[in-house]
Amino acid sequence: MNSFTEENYIKAIYKLLESGDETVSTNAIAERMHTRAASVTDMLKKLALKKLINYQRYQGVSLTGKGEKIALSIIRKHRLWEMFLVEKFNFKWDEVHDVAEQLEHIQSDKLIEELDKFLNYPKADPHGDPIPDAKGKLLARKSKSLSQFSVNDVCIMTGVVDHSPAFLQYLDKTGFGLGNEIKIREVVEFDKSLQIVVNKKTFFISSDVAKNILVILK
Amino acid sequence: MNSFTEENYIKAIYKLLESGDETVSTNAIAERMHTRAASVTDMLKKLALKKLINYQRYQGVSLTGKGEKIALSIIRKHRLWEMFLVEKFNFKWDEVHDVAEQLEHIQSDKLIEELDKFLNYPKADPHGDPIPDAKGKLLARKSKSLSQFSVNDVCIMTGVVDHSPAFLQYLDKTGFGLGNEIKIREVVEFDKSLQIVVNKKTFFISSDVAKNILVILK
DNA sequence: ATCAAATTTTAGATTAGCCTAAATTATTTT
DNA sequence: AAAATAATTTAGGCTAATCTAAAATTTGAT
Image 1 (cartoon, each protein chain N blue to C red):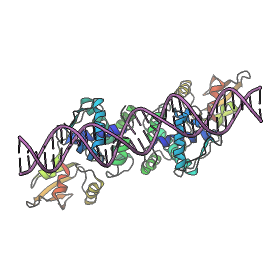
Image 2 (image 1 turned 120 degrees about the horizontal axis):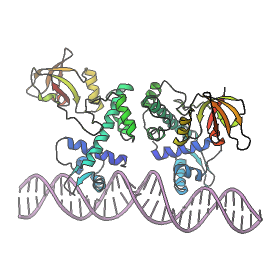
Image 3 (image 1 turned 45 degrees about the horizontal axis):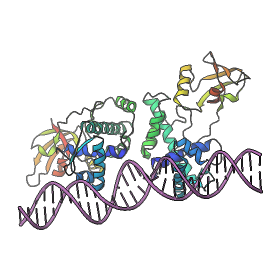
Image 4 (image 1 turned 90 degrees about the vertical axis):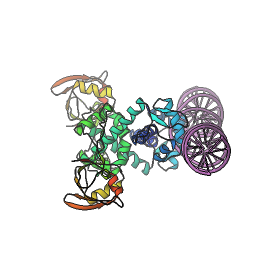
């Protein structure tokens, strides 16, 4: 059995690896975990001993198969609980993170099976992030950032990159949500900001915002 | 904020105090927590410093108002989650304990409010134990042990004393459950065992079993 | 009321997870 | 390719929660 802390490190490493790099640096982990590099080194030794990560000093880390399986099971639990909170307990999508962060560590196979069933086997969480299945299989997401599209493209919003309450609340206020159709009216060459149409209304969004909105072409 | 461990000690002290004594002994806590008396002493000092218990060395402990409030909030969460697992997730009453033991430490007022609402504000958990309300108010239970009644008394089963899976499964197998009507046919003087009628069927139960069944007179 | 037994506390270690400061290794610059 | 800088690890400590063994206190029996 792994401690909460170990699970959190594994999840952090998994998330950092998602950005594409082969290995993750000690500093990157330290920053994500709000801790110091020296503490990370201690934990890396421990996780390596348990064969959850591939680690040689000074060389960065990656997850072993075993480590990745654990990461996916934690992410599965996190996303199922987020879905549960939004669908059944009237949480907003910007309120779920901290609670799911606690719930993801609860150990009970039956609990998660029943949770999945109760939610009717959802494929994605309230932010559009895909939910790994019971075997840890995660369908790759085809979505791309809105900033990669051009004038006259029509897209469907499928997710967000930034999950911060601030960003999610901005989207709420503006009226954007998953499933919305977004048409690009104009791309401003100078700053890459966009003029878009959502729900028949026209908005201007910065390139920063566009980068954090995930869509698929309609 | 209190650690899981602190919460578990407080709950243990609360439960031990329920048996009626004014104070609880270090040894009793150690036994309940599956730890050593020396460890308990350390924790008692810490809890006393936080003003959660009344403690003077060698004199036993009791909870302060503050401590009792915390105990009740943990018990509230535990029992609400047990109810949830049984009512919504198809858990049996003998399967819920370990999971509820984890869930009771999740920190989120909104979560518990919504849980309570979702379950329609239940007054008792699946074992018949009363659920403290949001303010920590706990209605005293009027139930008594079946062993205190006599021939021809007719009772309604309202709870159990022993919560062990073994006992609960025995009740399931025999067909006893909360709400069942129990008529006492005979009390054997020699060993205080009982002959009872439940669902029109006659059973013999030992005085040990009778002691662990809670009922009210019909 | 004293002495033996039981209980409880103290003393001194241990482990997990964290820290700072110093040392080591890797990377970048010149 | 050497020097400067950045990243990482080691060394040594700290706190929370645990333990064993020994000391202190209370209880209970004569």
